[in-house]
Length: 439
Image (cartoon, rainbow, N blue to C red; front, side):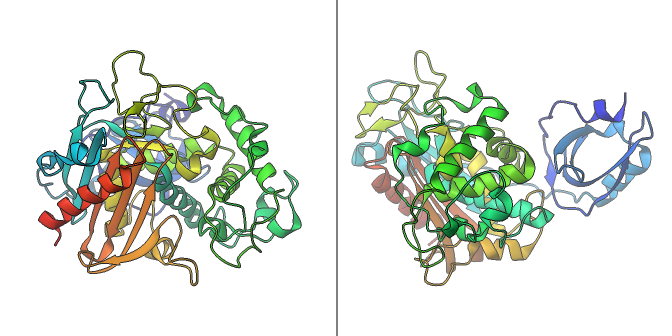
């Protein structure tokens, strides 16, 4: 087996895995003696994940395919995991919320001390159908995706592939036309909603986009080409305000930021999310768009709803267009969300982010910016015992709310499969969990 074959092993499900950051080192193939450089990011049962220096791709490798010296090094540098406590079923605390608020279903996550303390669900996947939501169902995150896109950008900054101060023109100037006003806008400004890009954009920006397609129906080339076309159209809209003059919430601005990452890497945002966020964190039940898109008969996932009563059939119209995914299209299971929130709650240096200052940058509000940081809004509650970062998200058919309290290494999140009453439902669920566990 040659080195290329070794690293084309299908990604393994790393059971009982340990995630952590290590400096780059040289690895050697036991079969061929060929070497490569990379950093160890995860150790599982009989396999490891390594981020290769040459292209930053993360690959799964069988321990048996590495030389004994490499295996010994891994054993010496892998901390023994502390036993995780049981995950508590919180469903009873939120059991009546769907009836009380007129929401088809609700889900909840609680993280304490960096561990998943509890999850709970209540309600039905589809109004007027008997199928109940289950603990491993996948929920639409809406604009809570933005913190994930900002975190993704941070991995590129840490790798030195781009900087927070890198401008739109430096990355995209040769690839597309743009108004002069946008040329000095930086990656950091886009993620803080200070790029001057309008919050509301005309339908004309979607002219080059297969609007209702599912991501899996498009090739990587199509994803890159069409998202770049969208970004170019956006960068030729009149700014809503002078760039960096104030806060202007903009989904389109997050797409432009993602296109900068796509240009630097040559890979679509979706693949980057899988390689740099989902896979390293063990988020195996996460994806993009409506999680129920493939349903043909009875619902297998929470369906989106209008007015809390009308289920939206799978297909075009069940979500925003895939092209603005970086601003709000991720779906994930409760346990996957807990893994992500735990990283932000603890500032854990591991397979995704490796520098404390990166978390500080993402979690610190920009002055005179409506308390917005990068993908998070900075707030404070009695239970957080210090600054908290939070975000709500909705595609107008689902609703989600994230709250993270770094001082307590705690987080809570709530999810519904409708939007109109989703905010009330999420608030009620979070208040119930906080009252019992975090007050």
